[in-house]
Image (cartoon, rainbow, N blue to C red; front, side):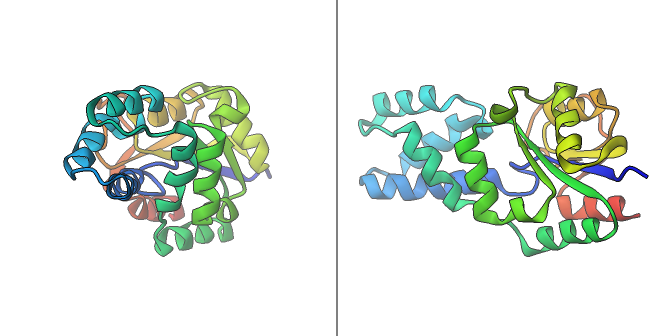
Length: 209
């Protein structure tokens, strides 16, 4: 029997990406000796990470003076990420129950792989699928097929758990997966997931049932 798969988004699903960005912004602004208003500006223009970094940092330099290097950001930001021990425990419980687990994340290899390693999530799942590495992004169903193959699982009877309706939920549906939406980080509300919870910890109970 082919093992079943649970795919998890990384940012704002398994980890608090927005909280990590705020912590990084406070650290960077303090180091640069700028007014705390620069932190508010970064958070306001970050758009949950969807604003391209080159454009965000160019606008920041124009507004405040100091330049932020995209390469430095990609190396620095991951060290501010954290994962709850309960999340790692939940992942372990699913693996013990026979599920195969994959992280399916849109993003660059340097930053996403560093987040996965820093938090230990890369060791808690069977496969990590980063869009830049595989050349396809959510909501394209092909990224889930790649994740299933990498995790040694099938898509039938599987799940996608993530925070973004247009990428995670739509992508899961495209791949024939049941879906769980986490949080309310995005204004878009469609498509609708099978379940919607505030925290990924609540999703573990559904997956374990």
